[in-house]
Amino acid sequence: MAHTTYDTNTQIRDRAILISLVTEEVKKSGILPEHSLQELVSLAETAGVEVLGVVTQNRDVPDARWLIGKGKVEELRGMIDSLGANTAIFDHDLSGAQVRNLEQYLDVKIIDRTQLILDIFAQRAKTREGIIQVELAQLSYLLPRLSGHGKNLSRLGGGIGTRGPGESKLETDRRHIRGRIGDLKKQLEAVTKHRKLYRGRRQKSGAIQVALVGYTNAGKSTLLKQLTSAEVYIENQLFATLDPTSRMLELPGGSEVILTDTVGFIQNLPHDLVAAFRATLEEANEADLILHVVDASSPMREHQMSVVDSILEELGAADKPQLILFNKKDICTKEQLEMLPSGTGYLKVSALDDKDLLAVKEAVQDRLSGGIFTFRIPPEDGGTMALLYRIGDVLEQKPEEHDMLYKVKVHKPDYEKWGYLLDSFLIRE
Ligand SMILES: Nc1nc2c(ncn2[C@@H]2O[C@H](COP(=O)(O)OP(=O)(O)OP(=O)(O)O)[C@@H](O)[C@H]2O)c(=O)[nH]1
Ligand SMILES: [Mg+2]
Image 1 (cartoon, rainbow, N blue to C red):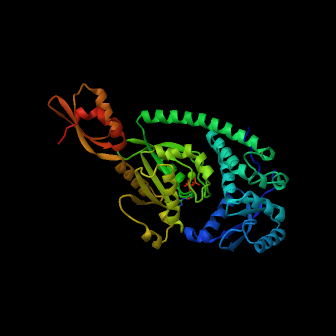
Image 2: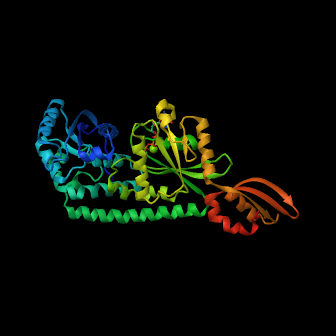
Image 3: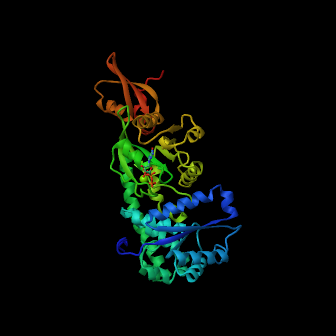
């Protein structure tokens, strides 16, 4: 199926009211409701929605029929009428029944946080793999809620919540959607296999992989660009990057690693999406070193870090060597900077500062270094000598009797891969 593209000029622009529900569960989670709502506003704006207003409600538990209390629903209806909204976006996942009830009563399009995120992903996906992944996630999300969506999706005929699978798809029966999900999974498998092959080749070539991961908008793409002079898409919006981009990064010692930018993480990342993007996020899993980029200026810094940690754990990448980059130090307050932990695993940087960029490269080099070793190699053995240059930085070379002595600062990942070939040349002291 062709991916539905969205032309903002010919569509009715979404004019939305955002609704945040603060339950006991939310209070216990440590997520500050105002930040979550702020994030929802950013998500909506990123999706191209005009935000007309917000409504919040405190309630111990969600209402089964309406999510929010009936009185709030009335209030919302009044706001919708007076502001001329055509969409209501809830910072909370909705059941099919809740969508149906709200849609009937309010007569606007009802969207929840997950759909909003999925919609942004649909707009952003560029590669075949990304496009399939998004459609798969959208359909998996839609399937159990199918009965909830009715006339408004087709009446408005576009905008958030309807991009991707396309309107006609929403009207077909579940069996059809299940069939489509099956097809997509097969396609995804084929594309992923191809990627794995390519990745395998990259690994065989001995290249060291370093992955930039972190919360959305932390500055990952900016760092990739600044460190490698790559042309990448940088925006002060959420999920600017969807498909991983890899570039060569030259370290101060002269050796090269492959640096990969990845999709940003977000709290409550829809589970279907994590599953669908597993293949992409596996870049992090394949990495020899993870650079966890943190927006140190964010008031939600700690929470965002723990979101990233738990997603890394879900991916099985929690035990990878990690370096934490506290980014955007140039816009941090003095207090924020003082609060940051320090030590060898952490670096406070600004992606816009050349000195800091050099410090990042040095730290990467250090983290990848497995120590300094000396090898004795006969001068005619060019192959082994070439191998030395592959596993690290040659610091010194001098003749001794008939051989050459090489002092090498080895890269841990390379040494683990190739070191066994050098065992017999190693001088043990
Ligand atoms: N002041 C300041 N701004 C920064 C710094 N690094 C990045 N930014 C800005 O932060 C915003 C987000 O940067 P990106 O590089 O797109 O962030 P990202 O982590 O790739 O975001 P996603 O792709 O959305 O996950 C942009 O407006 C950048 O210009 C920094 O060190 N200092
Ligand atoms: Mg990015």
